Image (cartoon, rainbow, N blue to C red):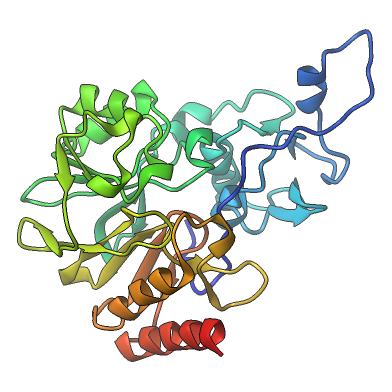
Length: 324
């Protein structure tokens, strides 16, 4: 998969929208939603009307999928085997199963077995995209980090036995770190299968996460082993926490901060926050002291900064945009 640097990230999305379609006696509204959107170009791949505009397909296969009229569409059919493989990876990862091919692809099992996908084998060894995004977390990305002290599953992908098999081949997971309440998805199924210890901040404990094994209290920071630090960044939710992988200078941000689709600027997507603006900005200030160069968000494109100074410049620009 091609490295995506300094691209646009999705906003945090409201629940899926249903397209209003005229009644037909021969097909139910749900069946009509699965029809090819007219915005797709002709060819093998297409997107249906159930797309929730989570951007997953657009950063996984950017040469194929674009936003057209507020939803994803196939702007160009794959022109190489690499592009076709990326399109099939996006198909499997789509949280609403809105991506289709005209005929069942003969190589789909091979693509299933590619997950989890290495983010960058050279620069980020042992860091993987899980794929299989869940509609219950609005299409958020889940990651797997393999580590000698215990593998970490970051947020919850959609549960599928095949992905579970593949994760177990990589050593399973000792921990499941949940960045915040919005992206917990199938955490209970994963915990039962992988026998992993789940971690979430107590501020985000609700009925669905009451049985999580480790609940973080206070403002932290906390540690997982020697290489991982948990940084409390309230604002999006009371219990939002980022995971800092110190040796790789990598920060998993959940929904705390990502990139705006409209520009290359960082964005807080405050309209979806459950906390105050000032609290969110204070959490951003906290990240100025964290020496990371990679930002892997819950939604949208990952970012590779030139160095820590470039990261800080982007954070300071974000703060200036909200306080000026």
